[in-house]
Image 1 (cartoon, rainbow, N blue to C red):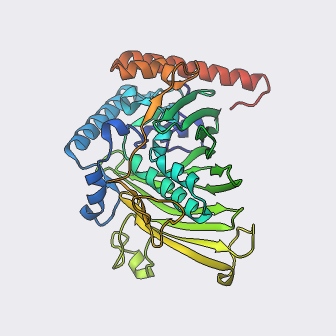
Image 2: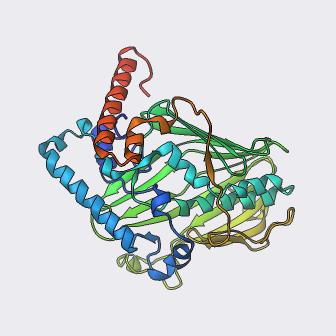
Image 3: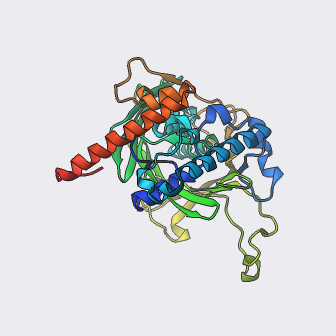
Length: 409
């Protein structure tokens, strides 16, 4: 595989050496099968600490994290002065899970039944409620600290969910790294597609990152589209101390055809005075970490989706919840029957959609990659050997494109 430029947390604007540094401290967003968050963990996590987020404090988490850090420091000692030229260094496979980022990315969508329900709604506002629940539900599926393999340019991933929904992913650019996806219900009740890459900043023992790019859900029954972007993520304890993951920021969901907008805040921060700001470890009274709050509105001016005066907005509903636990609406859905018309997602009761392998995937499918195959077989030596080979191949391909005057990707 090529130089480590694609990861859930990295910088798209830095040089190759700086990107390698980002990869060195990349800790998260993968290995859900081995380190998945249980329902009871999601229910209790916010009660265990006033800072919120998901903390890797279970015995098996701590043991795995200690081993990972030990291997990483040993690798750094072996490399010695070679670390001065990070562009020529390949990260050790002990830091990776045996999956490509393309495959790992689809873990965000494991509550796929929410989009199936959205497609069944006749009321556009109900449809919006389900799409918001779908976007929030994916966050809890991304709480682990192993790194997925970075996709090779042109690499693909294909699968389908147990409910028949088809998944197609492709790495369409290497530098800057861009992953593209198209997810569709087989009878075309809905199509979910988009392009995404990640940007990040490193400060001491923490990493802050965010995926940029528009997520779009289309509903052919009336030609409507709902678009949104994702919030940022903060990972603390990258190299030492308590490892934790926390989401935060704003999301805006838009349905231009039906003049709907939903503004959602994840982990909204309390207002603090200048004096309070000096004591950042202390939150204002009443602050509850990891909360989700949102308001669904219809704009009276059709087709205009910009911030208008309050008089031009009609509030339809409010949502509340916690990205580790649940999302519910004050009024709820009415156009279709559900087991709970208000709480549309609950980690304890909502069903996960199982992903199924497809027969005869393309030769470019990431599951054919030798480094992944050997890592799955727990042969780290062979996995490292193939990882180096694939990195050199992609470097060579990129150089040829550059020398030929083409786009480097």
